[in-house]
Length: 86
Image (cartoon, rainbow, N blue to C red):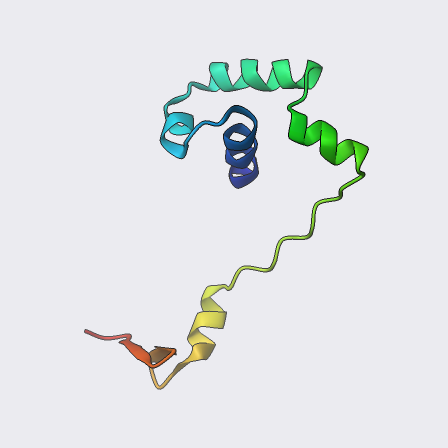
């Protein structure tokens, strides 16, 4: 399940906030998605008409990438230093 895309779909299509989506039951979410399968939200119809294709998601930095930034155990970001040990 791609939770960020699901939250984005419900927030965009129904105007719900993240807390409102969190409070939804799975059965309510399923009913909403079933309805949208028959009557898609306007933004999905427009994307289809314009043949918009999703852009690939940028790769997320993993732990190894963060370690590579931490020269001598200190992570540096724009002048602020964050020590690995406190």
